[in-house]
Image (cartoon, rainbow, N blue to C red):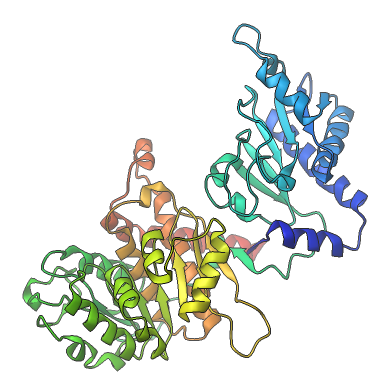
Length: 486
């Protein structure tokens, strides 16, 4: 996994480095110069403008400029105010920035806590050093930056490179190792190879009840939710899926052909839903249940008494918000999967700008694994009671795109998580990693566009996401095999 550290954590890591600042700056500057040469496709006849501030970020830029000049590049190194003036005074007939093949933003990096006046971007591509100046390295908030085509960051990723709008402003991010010890990071980005290693493998002697998933989802008004959760669980490896939609006769429950439906009469259905639950390896509750007070009370009863790993989504989260005591009674792992609005219901307010801290606090308060949905999905678990750590790690999954922002996508994700947990994850670390791996796997379905290149730009329906899980899993396996061979 790739480490993610806050600016404060990175400052402590820098201070603990065995080498001095000059050595670290030399390595960082060299990495920037190599990236610049690659972006320009060579050095002959190239011209580069470097906006270099007073701190280490500026020092990185000046070292990069010196290296580029040795390779034959003509570099102009200016202060941030001078760089802004050069860009601002460029006009349509004779834009000053047209003389540059590349602009290197080494103005402030993570050291800026606001705007530096970068209202107009250069015409030339921008290479940012560590993070685009003006992007908050902790929250990803944009206080005015030059959007970068690429960013070279050092030692570890910063949250602002993963959280939007900072993630979009950073362009393609390259992590350059410069000899810093980031092994103590409390947040990590899941890669394809990580997900492949964490996801359960097929068992040669498995039978259909080996990974059984119970689904309580859907209602007379929202029958499709259960169908999507079941289809995703099956595609993600569940051998047996049994679904009930309260108030819908088994014969009328929307489900894949292979899923089994059971009746749940309207009213007090929790006891019937819990009947035989011990035979299952994981369960899902919430998608499409509706917000009727009776349904929410029954869902809370199911959550409190369900003895197997449980994924709670959608209306199930509303049930938790209305009946928070239901989580206190649980002994088996619980995964809550809120978007921002549901997060506000659960915690009393929307996620803070520092989403990493927000999801970590929510996991501690709710005593559950919390998956906070977003362009970058964050997963946190409560720290083990017998450790001195203030909180457990936060894992980030950034594999998805806006193509997944379609109705029913969350139902699919719930099915994938339940199928992964059904392989036997019960320890907190295993549940945390399995949930993050499931989110990464689900996100990877967005990479498939069929034979039409334009399809990669269009929304991906939830059912199509479920159907693409097999292809996405094969891609993760290929990445895992490549990592193992190198």
